[in-house]
Amino acid sequence: MTVPIENYALLGDCITAALVSDSGSIDWLCFPRFDGAACFAALLGDQGNGCWKIAPRDISYTVRRAYREGTLILETAFTTASGSALLIDFMPLGGATSKVVRIVEGISGHVDFDMMLIMRMDYGRIVPWVERAGEEVLTAVAGPDMLVLRTAAPLHAVDKSTRSHFGVDAGQRVIFTLAHQPSHVPLAEGIDAEAALLVSELEWRRFSNRCPDVGVYTAQVKRSLITMKALTYRPTGGIVAAVTTSLPESLGGKRNWDYRYCWLRDATMMLMAFMKLGYFDEARDWREWLLRSIAGNPEQMQIMYGLCGERRLPEMELPWLAGYEQSRPVRTGNAAASQMQLDVYGEMVDTMTQAIKGGIAQHPRGLAILQVIVQFLEQAWRKPDHGIWEIRGAPRHYTHSKIMAWAAFDRLARWPGELGCDREGRPIKECCRQVADEIHAQVCSSGYDAALGSFVQSYGSQEVDAALLQIVLTGFLPPDDARVAGTIALIEQRLMRGGLLQRYDTAETGDCLPPGEGVFLICSFWLVDAYILVGRRHDASVLYERLLELCNDVGLLAEQYDTAARRMLGNFPQAFSHIGVINSALNLHNGSVAGGAPAHSRAEPPSRKG
Image (cartoon, rainbow, N blue to C red; front, side, top):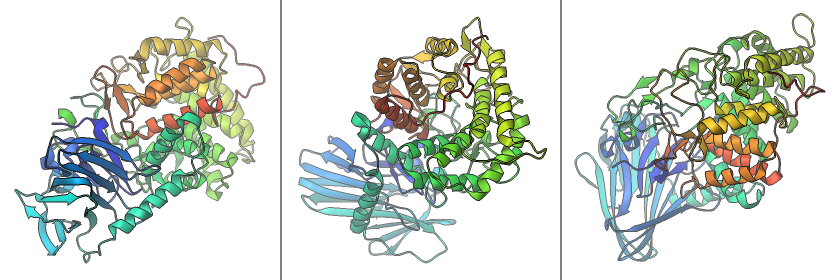
């Protein structure tokens, strides 16, 4: 039976990640990094595609779980008729290769446990060669990969799986470690699991204790901050959008995408959240990753990259996996990497501006790259694109894309320092102001429908999408502009489902995929922030509390939520959603949009005419 997405918790070491269910089963784990081929892929198939389960033999147990305060160390408490025990799951921080450690500790009485380990390489497809490499060491080899299991518990083989039956009394601990290494190198030494637990707890708390007070929202902000840190690829500073692929936006549907890559948009928003909380080391690392990844011809800048800045992310299907609740196809790679999405330029420039203002020293290459991007964007903003939602249809003149192109030029016109002159000797900041004003006029003319009293999704359409909330969040128009109120009202009217916000109407958007999906959670967080700006603070608080209620028992959120079935949808845990948790909490706590965009640059408010 498929496990609901919300029943999973996250383990991670800032290199890769695992998902463990509330029944003690690790159903997703990729080695050697986030985008590696999964060795446990039951999440997208069944147990035969790989999993690692540790649970009481008495299936009538009750379960309760939580992370240790300020860490990513998961404790799952099992209570049976004969006693209680704790399963401690974590991935040690700082190692050269990734490992999963699972410690079973007796709390009271006696509890018998079953352990089932089904290792399947290449996303559940390949059965490895398993053999003993020592009294307490088991190896599994398939091509370039080797998994190494170390435990003192008795092991035996059953139908191409490894099993163990063991019991724990109060105070007794049984330890399992699973490590990955290249198969062609000598067997690596094992680790001291107890010492690794202490070090990992210390490191996580050292990180999370720097989180500032956010009033009643501090605990959830800290959990979201830890989750975002776990989505960071430590060797390069890249930040993945989620740790999974192909968790569906609609059950049984085809909207199943690979999110284990670094979107410029997601990462820039994460960077802004880090900076708002005072985490400038993480911001600096990401800025270094960004400048390496986008270096080169600005016409070839992509919306997403691999963990080390890789540009080729070929999309393919894995037909041997049935998909989460029969949601096929299962995909790896992402063809959207080749799309033109103008908004990423605005988000990137805005973030780099905020980084400079936050005290991060300007990178010597950064200014030169910005100057080249300006020259490219002066022409590119006039073209249609695929928009923020990566709609797989014909390009359009998306209003949100133009607004974010405006944001790029607006922020550059306000750059805290000199930008020099272009090839024709014109001051770049002065040119940026002229282009920003031109874009602003066009958006107000072509992106606004006077009959609807609202901005629209794309020029000439009568549809709206939630990204139009950026009109007020970026400072494109002031909060008291009647067009802002009209746009918010129409978004509420057309996109609200069960008190939450869809990103757009999938039946009307021109996408080549079948319609239907859940509500996209970041959009409701944007609405919280918009409510604050326009003075609807009570509405903001009510909506934010509703969103927090959607978090699972360990504080995690997926990309989307099905308001009818009351369950999570989409890849998990989703960076976008946790960015929303942090930003909206800061905005509610501070009483305004924290670190938000500057007010509109014109001396006079822009015209209210359509």
